[in-house]
Image (cartoon, rainbow, N blue to C red; front, side, top):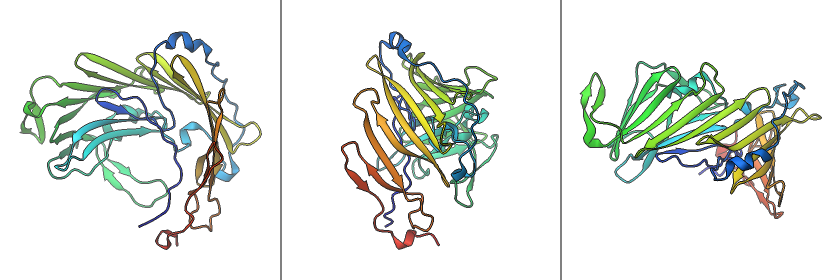
Length: 336
């Protein structure tokens, strides 16, 4: 068994939408009451960042939140059981920047390989994509998901237009035999998740609304390219703001300042990212920066001759405890 710890990627979870479980990597979006009065305490959005050049260690690229490998927009939709042994599955989307494709099901991915009682039907009318792991050779061709029929129910994806689509859920007794390769349904879906562009033709925001039992819950992400700032709104209330700035003295250092609304107050977290030859990595995190200021530091194997090059080396926790990683290289994982 390989013992390597893969390179560190910081993740946290977003609030759960009734059926859709929304996940945000690096941004936790927490809903709370009393948000309106607290919003005035937020600092103003930073002015447009002037181009100060790129990071030499990263091939001259300029560090931004949209090329950090951390996905600001991410969500998944639960599909219930997908196997006889109780395994559950989901379809998900992960975007580091909002594009025209973000409003289509073409970028959705499955968390499982369909087999046994679960049937997956793709949509041949949608364009094919080549899926590849960054830095790896090869890849595979995939096509947009159309329907999933499993032990717990049936899911159907319906494209409304170029700016949105719906993920509709039905009970199995609503499913009828196939026609032209797709299952037919009767009656109304018991749950609908809508993904759309709320302000076309601009592509700077994405809105996801889940409706079930007459209740709708809406989440919206917005991105300001000029200031490299992300915003998250839950049911119209701003719950998170994340500002990103490159250091004025070091183009290989990027500072993210994030504000999360918790209990009617804004909690600040500061993360420092550094540019390496392989990309950006978080090197320091300060939680509750205006309060207890808990500091965690991260170090990586940055020697290309080391078998664990690019992997996380140590984590220094707020209490001073040092956690070491990959101390015993696995010969089977050493790069030739």
